[in-house]
Image (cartoon, rainbow, N blue to C red; front, top):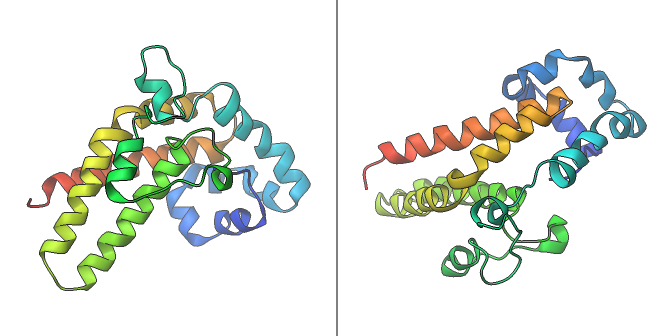
Length: 185
């Protein structure tokens, strides 16, 4: 989760984005992708508002009784990451804790990539194993808190970009879980 830079602006101008973020691509915000200055003026305040000020993007915040972010071994994600051999580079992610929504979504992307690689092997058991890990991650982590976060982003976002992005992420999580539940164990 970063501010809109040149690389992200290129993605946002793509045909893929037109299908994924229809309200954003129909808005005048697309024209504001043209320069770094217009991007910063349009999107940076909303990014800061949605990731640091009004909406908290950490699983532990939503799952702890005291609504604090847990950065240590008591973090709800620590055991899952350790069990499956994943590590989070907090400095690169610009994150206080491993349970940041961006890190958790990146882990989902890694698992989806591993699933695609597993399918390519032709071994029927290997993809199911990866799918079980994906499903466990969704059920034990992302689906326990991320829907609340994404709904809060939708409600608080000032830009169509972040409203549409939150909706797309929420729909992905729900549809991915639905597909994984339908898969034979």
